[in-house]
Length: 456
Image (tube, rainbow, N blue to C red):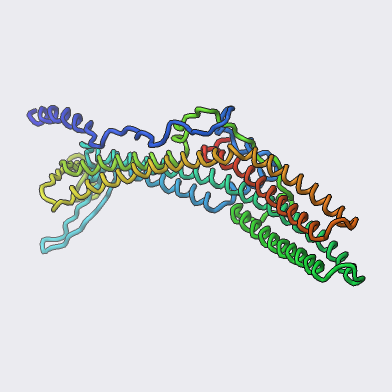
């Protein structure tokens, strides 16, 4: 009776102790970034739009689909999540007692004969009473690490979608530049052939012929260079996709609208960045470090482990399950840390330092995300003006070349003037293609850095 009373008095104390969590109270850190971006346009932000709706080119969408199915980096990220999920289940199992059944038999011989002992037991082995939430905090840390890897997988997918699109557009631009170089080479070769015939008739100087040849050789160099770049672009795209793409799946030229143009409303709050997967992953790591502090603090306090068995024991197998063969054992043990040469203090210091590291990493991730969006907006703010100006320059250069070529053919101007005008037109068209690539890539960059590319 006295023993039952003591247990009744001890139970509330144990229940109260089980509510003690020594981990620091977690509060989301204040974002070390401005409240909003300085450059933004009117409109509505649509970063939650799925990538299938964001991208407009059917070929590009098919290529992205194949990359999501075959890319090895994304596959590794998914397997990391599966591994972390399994590790979390292992850690979570420590919250519940493990129950096992055992059966044994022993035979011992002596001068007096042979003695037999048989037993069957159902027992709980070394179950720790989580009085100070040490096991719970370890479980929470494992959960947060699992959630961090889930966000890392999302971030990997977003990056993959964007990288495939970048590579696909780069290939399209390099193919356009190759086509331009081939057209220029054909034109320069035709001009050189005319100059050579004129030189044979004595109507053109050797200087003019040599100048014409330099333009031909320069165009040949450009053609060979762009042929190499195109093949490298295809190789890079195949690596991202994880498979070889057919010729029908590759872009023939650079389109004007491969993806939607997101409009960012003025005054858009930078708190939007706290939903980016890489930022969420950093915060989960911070929460895991926070929980680890609680586990390290609990090591300073006593821990109680329980070992208990209940079953039957008999010297004869035939009477093992008869009356009087019942047996039980209950063996609680308490571990009270007294002297550990500073190991617990060192573990706590390490946990607190790790928490500060994760805090700095979280803040740096937010700052990096803010800068990425700010950079994309800065490029976007002048792209329309730059494209309009470059298009006007290209049109004016084309008219200049047409006039210079007409004057030369009518004998009113030198071949050198026509040659310079042709070079200027070639350079202007190259710059226009590169700027068109920048404009299309900026649409994807803005979509990516705002966290788009995962939801469907």
